[in-house]
Image 1 (cartoon, rainbow, N blue to C red):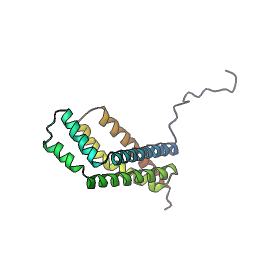
Image 2 (image 1 turned 30 degrees about the horizontal axis):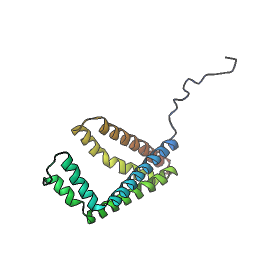
Image 3 (image 1 turned 135 degrees about the vertical axis):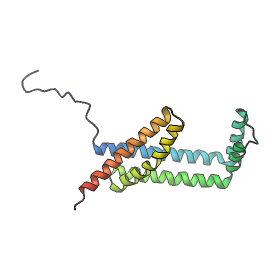
Length: 165
């Protein structure tokens, strides 16, 4: 190497900027919104009668008694009114995810608060599930949620410190 040249030994190991991290969480939240919309579309397309038949077919295929408590309850629960409620909840959930993603993409403070509080609410449930059913899937879910809470919580703290006063 010639005089004056240098080597950056840390090249490629620089952590993502806070703005990049917020955008990554925004993409993740938008992805959850897309999944909710796809689920609502699939449930709406199948409709209650086909879903009831599907539950009964799966139960029969695995040898579960069709008059058993859980199978009968699930088949009865999949009536039109319940399905409409599930579809409405999925659509509201998707809308919230898209609104949060929009706000995070544009680095809005309210979106960081919304996302941080929303994600943190799931942490006790995820810890309990990992405790009761240890495995790679609950570990990944918990790790991803902790990362989301970390990124958004750090953004909220940064914004609070920047307030005058």
